[in-house]
Length: 169
Figure 1 (spheres, rainbow, N blue to C red):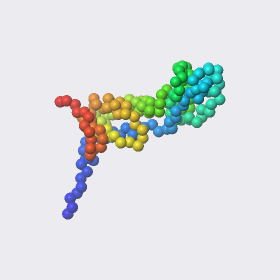
Figure 2 (cartoon, helix red, strand yellow):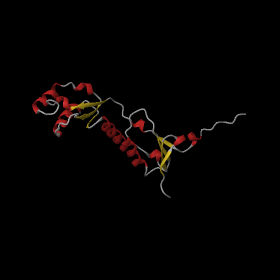
Figure 3 (cartoon, helix red, strand yellow):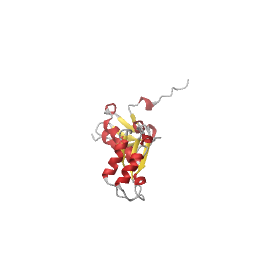
Figure 4 (cartoon, rainbow, N blue to C red):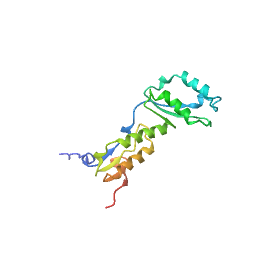
């Protein structure tokens, strides 16, 4: 009679945390303000305001938007603020920065508000591989929240986890 195969990982008290599950679905966009600057460098207020009024903002409906300027132009804060007045009514989030900055902010907001009570006093593995873009800062923010409440922290998969933290006794 063959011996029954036992899945020891499934029976263990180890909890796995997959940051990929916190990814907020939605299209991500970058808007380069240099497109509305004279020769890509000079902000002429009247022309800038007129260009924004004529621009089709509906393409960003329900999306996440990162505003930036790809040239060395000095953009005053009010210019980013003015662009955001067109975007806030139709988008989920607008930031100044790159798409990486945008993803980091989205993860930070989610991690800050997530209920971690299921992980208290348990060994936890933070899953490392993901198909969605998970910024490295998200891992750091998660560890900050988990470290005070878990029995131990590891990174990777159950079969090859890298130990990160175990409280001193």
